[in-house]
Image 1 (spheres, rainbow, N blue to C red):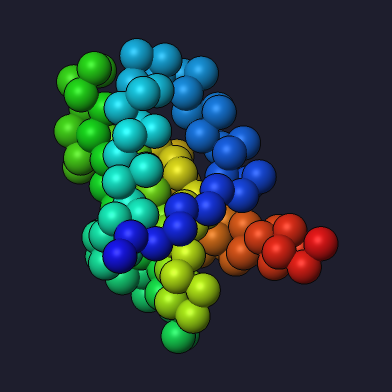
Image 2 (cartoon, rainbow, N blue to C red; image 1 turned 90 degrees about the horizontal axis):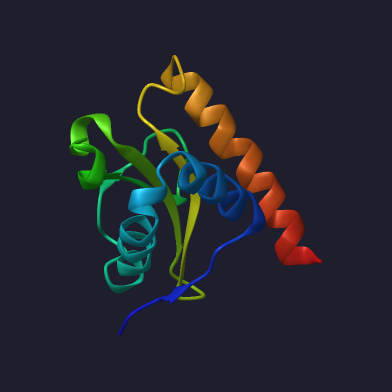
Length: 119
């Protein structure tokens, strides 16, 4: 059974910024993100978050001739107890200089999501 796909404000904001820059790929990106609900095990497990199931999936920007290796990264959170999968971060490879910067972005986004869930 597919999970519920839930998008939170931080992700929607990041997706909007990506869509402005890569307008020809907007529908493709949305379609690929929506596919994540059917396979929560997609992508590689992101280290450093303990028991939280956080994964990184690589997405190409075919309309721009950009493959997976230089394309977008979508970080997702899977909550098995609620059967929810949520894309929490999306960015273009190379936007952040180090893995620590990406982890900090993920931590900050998780804090925002927790606020949204408790509201």
